[in-house]
Length: 118
Length: 116
Image (cartoon, rainbow over all chains, first blue to last red; front, side, top):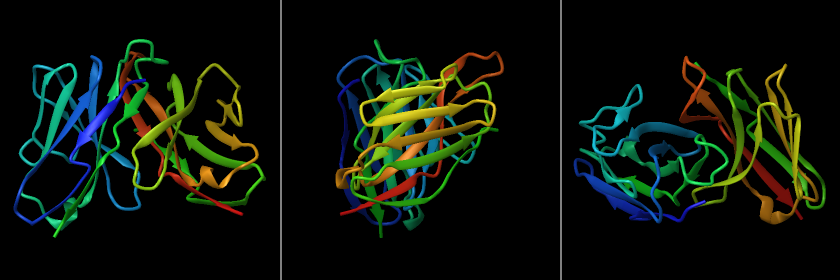
């Protein structure tokens, strides 16, 4: 596995503002993903963060709302833009393609960022 | 598209066995996973099973796979209060060529409550 950290661990924000969440891994990984987990719900994939190119977004998620950066193989950021209370969720990053992992599918998760929008 | 279904709640007494069930639809899944989420935490990879296996045992955990019925279960023996958490099953998603491109589809999660 790998050590995955996220910053901040939690935040309370005002509507209309933006928050950038950072995800750092202690080893190089092929794939990085961003998920949203709304209260009491399962995980929904927002996008795949691609190193050196634009992220690949899932249906229902757009770059203007959730810009993503991935400048190298160990770091990615997700920005939640122009927030509303409906964006209150846990945001999780995960990594895949780790050397020595079970398979290329296997994903390991960060601790999550708990966001509350007032 | 892929769909993964789980029962939402399970309550057991400490020391009993817990069985969490999951059904999935993607017959081309190569690996199926179980993740555990404790309150306020991220997801911890608990165990997995390769699609050509029927059973996998790992200490107190037993994973059973019925590929014909697309049914997966996780059995926790001698359940402890520390096992109280949300358990997610997840399947890998293969592309049209049959090779995986790294995506997982998650079930809704089963909330396991263990009573003393």
